[in-house]
Image (cartoon, rainbow, N blue to C red; front, side, top):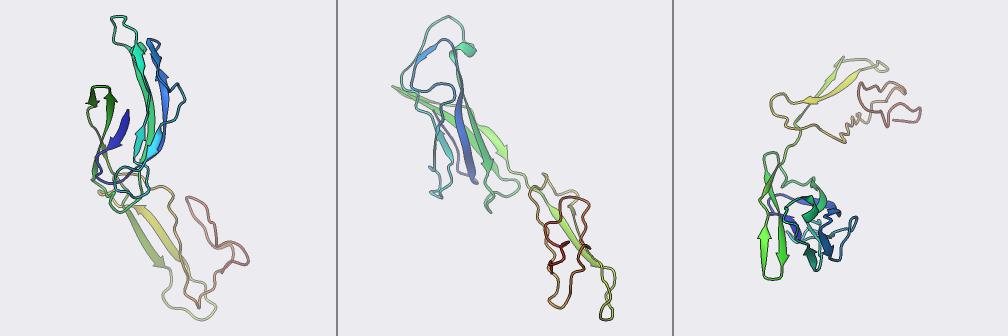
Length: 189
């Protein structure tokens, strides 16, 4: 069984494993928990984009039913790679292909729509003029751009680099979401 996509955008396969084998099936080299082989078959970019399972000879004992006892289920976990070609609106087509002795069979395609956040950043200062030693409050605000964002933003890092002649007041950095990593220690500048 070969699981891949059509090469539009970049899809990264993170893991692939046999989830279940039906009770009517015997033989075969893979059992529940067996990993698939992850390969880079599209684009030669070093990103694993295909999962391959080699089951060997599998025998399905006839019971006149087509049910879970006659199926092999594999789980493939993939993510849309964080690359420039994966823009909002790109549609990836993924499918599975089973190869056997005299033929092959393609699954129907599964479509994946690429969505991405659209952020609006505003930067303001409470006082545009001041004397030496005056405190100035800078505000950096990130918000979702209304009407254009199609997904949440994850792992967002906001940085405010002060002018070389400005000095940070220790303990003055605050946020209403997330964590201040640098900016509240006595040695921060």
